[in-house]
Length: 80
Image 1 (cartoon, rainbow, N blue to C red):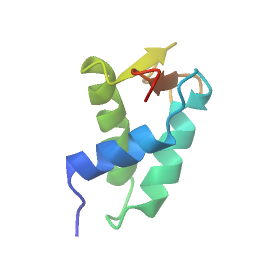
Image 2 (image 1 turned 180 degrees about the vertical axis):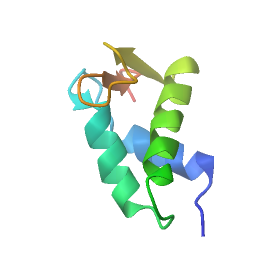
Image 3 (image 1 turned 60 degrees about the vertical axis):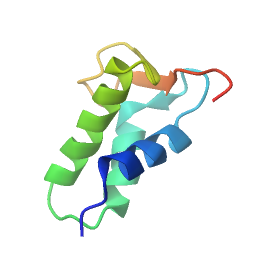
């Protein structure tokens, strides 16, 4: 069973820190491994949600976020 985008967003925001210390790669792999869906699509889904959260202002990105190894994110709300 596929989890909802809202649940996926909650997990992503839980894992993010208030400072730039989380690589997109770590979030994508850690959450992706826990998803019940199979294949690489689940990792792309997590990445897409990270990008959506940045676009919505719920997270702030630094560097090239499409490059999972180097892009970093933090929560958009410092009180978070």
